[in-house]
Image 1 (cartoon, rainbow, N blue to C red):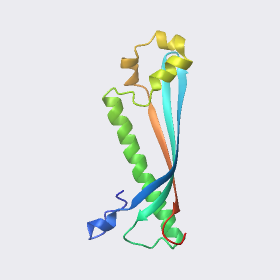
Image 2: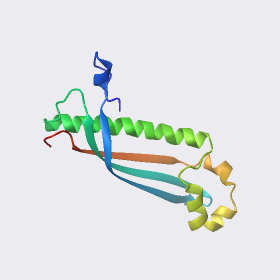
Image 3: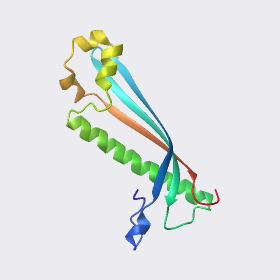
Length: 135
């Protein structure tokens, strides 16, 4: 993950992480008749595998790095949602949830048209818990 642009050596701008634990929750909410919104909460527990600056023994650096990772993943996730919605790809199965839980609304709507205007949001929460030999 690119976390900075400041370093002269390009490799030092990146951090490599492993996702140790992940939790994703999709919430579909009915706003009005035949109008819905969807929100995805993502929680990631991370292990820093490689970080060229190697200053993660300082707690403030871990916190700052976690914030940088979180911000980057948030922006990328929002971009992914925009792209799949533009492509009219219901990758997360929002339509299936509407059909299952709001069938009367589902019958009266054209999901292929409604999907492109359905508000989709995401919240990313990361936590760096492992960051070297001594944590």
